[in-house]
Image (cartoon, rainbow, N blue to C red; front, top):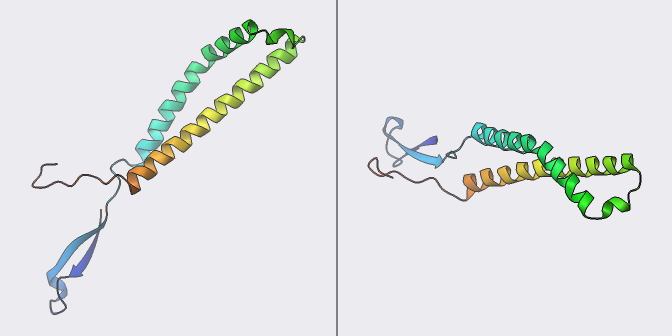
Length: 118
């Protein structure tokens, strides 16, 4: 918390200054937001191989496999689409955590304790 020293009146000396809070720090630090993002990203990446197999099975059952006659082109299209979706998911997670941190910093004010009770 940043503290500014402001004299209570003009006639007082600098020794009798009153402390006034200017800005409250967010309750969650940047380090915790980064840790939360990394844990979520790791969870998404751990799930990726199983998700890839699931998408491949659904693609085979959807009838799109008849349009893609070359097996190597079908695998390439599936991999490119999957990796683009995975990258977009991670980018959206970054935006989500950035928005959450900004909302916490500017909109949601930390609770004020009165006599040690919140």
